[in-house]
Length: 307
Ligand SMILES: [Zn+2]
Image (cartoon, rainbow, N blue to C red; front, side, top):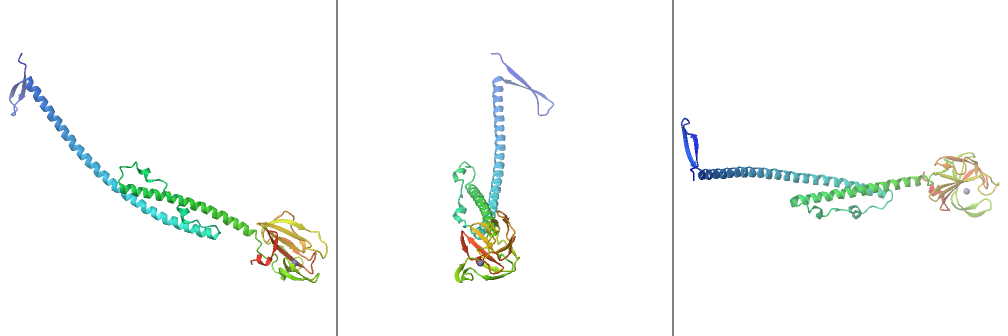
């Protein structure tokens, strides 16, 4: 085999002298492989050092981030506790208002209904989150859902209260509650009395208020005129009279009028002047015979005068 030697020409350490080294192929391959191995090892070590460094940096960054997240969760928990205090106050106010408008109070079980929503399984996928943190997150999530439920219930309840209040207000406006004549003198109350026409005791089913002829007569509540009687026979029955239907089972009658100032079907408001005092029909002098009828039964009008 031919001697294939490679001549390496290099400068000696001094730098001025050119030297020659003559090596065989095998040695060159051996040396090259060794150098390559060393290079690989070097690169591997460098990579290892960088990886360690990066890993440590990552761990410290994540740990910092984790503790910040925990702080955040704690802060959120405290804020939700404050919100719950406000929700409790709203619920208390809601109950007070319900009592005020005569609606049943909502019991605490109903208010708490719907707590939970998410079960713990929902969070089973978050296996990388630490137990403490996940428990805290579940607690917060549940509280948020609970608040949501309670606030929406309170909002519904507020609508019910407003509806009931407006209905009560409407009913109040339609309930006879004032004197039909401002002034005048009550000459006969509701109940048994001696009838001057037949000289017998009979039940007087209304209230007589005497006042000068032509005195204003007021509607005692909001309603609609359902009867207008302007024809009459002297010394008989109610004479000229008006009946107003107020709804909710209430009606009022105003009798022995001198003048009628409303027509049948007309809507009237409390205090509207509907007629004038007279002595038509079975009457001994100018006065108003006033009746309050509740569910077709005549009641004591004295009990329907508040002022
Ligand atoms: Zn009378």
